[in-house]
Length: 230
Image 1 (cartoon, rainbow, N blue to C red):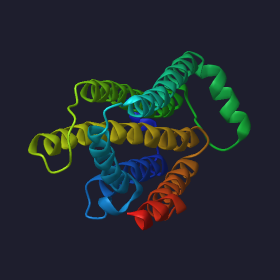
Image 2 (cartoon, one colour):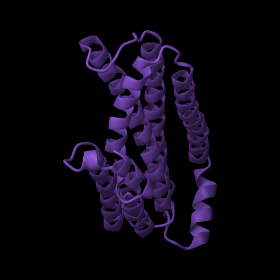
Image 3 (tube, rainbow, N blue to C red):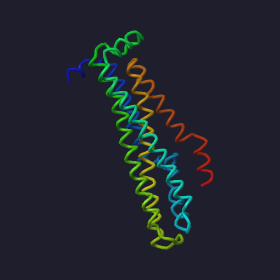
Image 4 (spheres, rainbow, N blue to C red):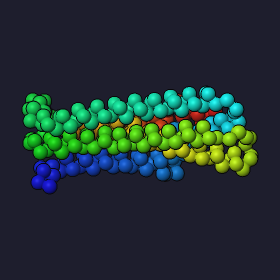
């Protein structure tokens, strides 16, 4: 608590901008009425369609390969995040040397060890959050592979097939959403690292990350192709 008193008004304002950008965009892209119009929402429909196509096939080698590729991608990020977390924990142990480094940059990074540790903890917390999302997404993709292995064969319109397709698509969507949340944590983790230099850098990077995420999810060429094809 004493260390929190070291934060200036500019630090609190920048931290508020950071949290508002992260939580605000999460709500906007997942729970607002515009969520279904973005890249994440558009992918949900394709996952349901994939489930129907898979249930019509007798041989599902292609589906197993695709799920394996998804699991590999999530595993890569989960493993990478562990190394990042380990590096940040090591940085906390070398806070004195980092304090001298930020002082040499002359950007007003941190005036004390306690303040520097608070800023490092923000970066660490961002990547820890991402790690939990990646690992939970990985478990859900494993559940998806089990559902695919136990899937029946049938056509769209049959009650059992419709229900199973929604089940497979739902688990796939949940896993994909957690993977997206982990990626988002990476983006805002980079913004949090700007606080080591200056509170203004933290606020500015948070806004830049917000704009980048919005453009990729709602104004990208990939979204245009998905919505045009649908």
